[in-house]
Image 1 (cartoon, one colour):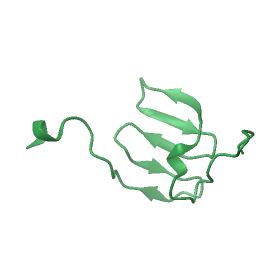
Image 2 (cartoon, rainbow, N blue to C red):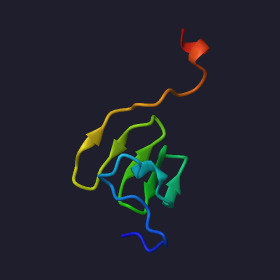
Image 3 (cartoon, rainbow, N blue to C red):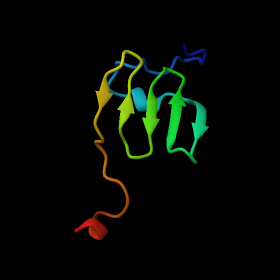
Image 4 (tube, rainbow, N blue to C red):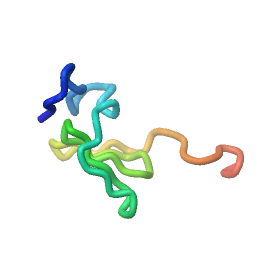
Length: 66
């Protein structure tokens, strides 16, 4: 999918979130990366093969949640 040089990491790579954003919809809370990964504002991901990656990064201020 990626036409960048050097190529972006594939969807199955641990650094898949480093791929370029091809479509951004902040009003809906998601972005499509050029490797086919849907990256959600809540830090979850949907991979092109249908696998779901649960949210895994802290969001906002950690003290506010405490």
